[in-house]
Length: 194
Image (cartoon, rainbow, N blue to C red):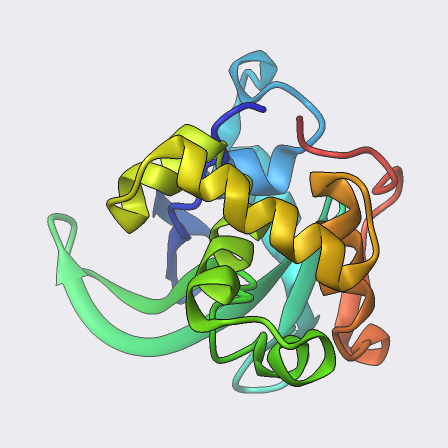
């Protein structure tokens, strides 16, 4: 399993709703499944994504940003903050937009504890698994051996009545409430991050 990039996407936007700066994570999230290195004019690309994907409405005095987007099969919370910064050109920066991958940390997985009788350590293992981490990476985060992680996962599989790691993830995401009305899905979003 490949390491999943969990750094939030960050976009700094000026008064005209044009990007002034962004990080690599924002470009990766908004460009998926396209390789970000193949985008020749990333600033224009990000501007178009803001206009057509991140804004609910720009016809008002204050633009309204969406609350959630889907890139691949991953959900991201879109949080926009009004600000009054001035940098270099003395041009005021009006918004910071953060794209944060939905966390299914222990707080969001409490229902699984009740439903499947998971222990706190099993729940922590499942939480890290849903971030796309390998057994070795989970072990490092939990400060336990990879064999202990595998034992936790076997117990979780037994309790959830599944036979694979992806079966665990499927049960986790299948048990989350659907927020489709607030979600802005993009075409070809059936592709998965690998």
